[in-house]
Image (cartoon, rainbow, N blue to C red; front, side, top):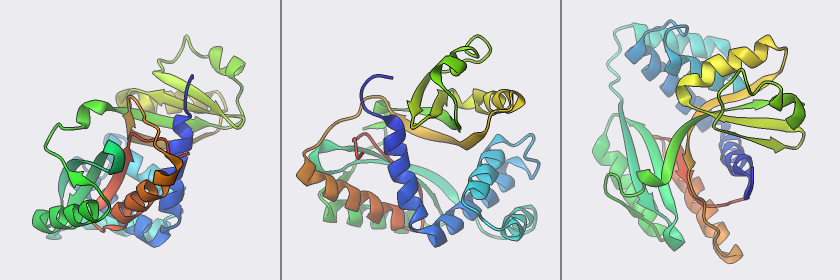
Length: 237
């Protein structure tokens, strides 16, 4: 891949989440509960639940906690979380996608608007920045060279790939992610970080003295309880 490293930007988001492990647990468990409630508790037929469980395992969420979340979804609990995606702008016109799970839309939009305005950003209208992103599946192959990967290209359909520090990051259609993961596992390759993300189609550079402001804004949005994921079209790495 030419240009900036997408994986470096994805890693930045993952590191920010790792630094807030307690909140990560809460958000992952919420995603498991919602996924199981919507699509059922069988991860073989529920791709969203399968991804949530993969993220939970990668985040070292205890198995008992995961089990309770699934049981909660199959019971008669009254938690009604709504999925909402907000679009907005940060300093220097940075485009932002914010995915939320909330039981109170008014609270969520109020908190988002407050954080954005305080840090030089604003909420946008529906569709204002969505066209700048595409939904993709990603996974990471451990200890594989580009030559070895190319040997498999006739058997799997990839959107893109990136060699990073001796490993390889695969970008694929979300619907192909699970099959591609199983394919590489069948070839005795180690697969990590299975996830569906909003990938910026074009990223922008900002002055070094503005990067800290963008990172601070990203962290503050990530801190909000109702926010599940945040994506920006800026190079933070």
